[in-house]
Structures are given as structure tokens and as C-alpha cells.
Image (cartoon, rainbow, N blue to C red; front, side):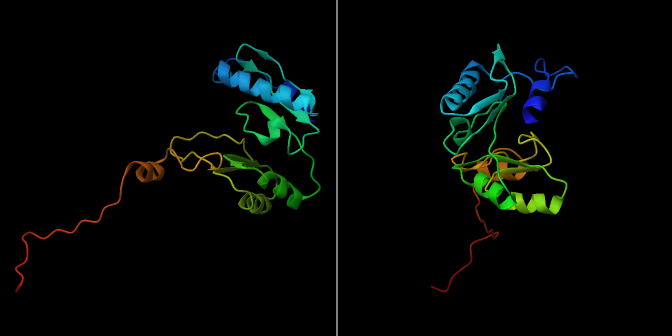
Length: 181
């Protein structure tokens, strides 16, 4: 089903209303995503959809039969690649998602918001998106991850204050006191 959804997405000029996915940021990143997909297939993952590109326009790609050692699962891709692993219940899904050195962004989909929040709370991540894509850019929100995905937050008023200032306590009296010694 995910493969059919990926195949149905239109790739192209992101300013057009009938396009769902724009280009990868640059050739270096395109090469990285393609390399991760190629290495994943060579390691035993099954290519279900995508895996091709036209210039910087990389087709949404779905890989099945992934393991914790599959390159596109074990490394951050930064491209339209889903490396699918089956699970039997929410606890196993949490275990799989939390078993990574990375933690930039997390998306949890579900009708029961309390359950989705509970799942998200158990997975280390710098950003959490419930019923949304894993990247949701907002200039007022801090951006950054945990673990190997980063050790700080960039952006947002509070994060900027923390990142670019030093706290200093200052007291002030109009004149110096006279001491009896």
C-alpha cells in the first residue's frame, strides 16, 4: 500500500498545486540518498517503489524487508526514502524506533491522540509530529535533534536566546558603600 501511495505522488516544481514533492537540495545530497538506497538493496532490502531520479527530482522510494543493519534504516537519509520494518504492536514499534543513534524528527500517525502522544514520549527525538510528516518547518520553532542528530537547537526565539547569549547577573547601586574598615 505504501508503495502505491509513493508511486502516485507527483514530483516536480514545488510551487505547483498538483505537485507533492519538489527537488532534493543539491547533487551531493541526491547522490547520498541514491547511494543509501543502492547499498540497501545490495544488502537485501526489496525496492518496492521509486529509486530513480530525473535531475534533482528523486522519486519517493519505499524499501521493504529492512533490518537494523539496512543502510537506509541505520543512517539518516534526508531524502524521500521509507525503509519499512514490520512490528506486531506499539511496544515493538517503540523499541524499533528508539533503537537508533539518531533522533532528529519523529512522526507518529494514529486516530487515538493519547496513544500517539504516549508512543512519541517513549522515543528520543528533537521534534515530534503527530499525524503529520516528519519535517514541518516553522521559523518560530526550535530545530535540532538528539543523539547523533545534534546536540543543540537552532531557531525559535527561546532557542536563539539560549544559543547566542550568556546569562549574567548584575547588581547596581548609585555609589559604593563606605565600610567601617
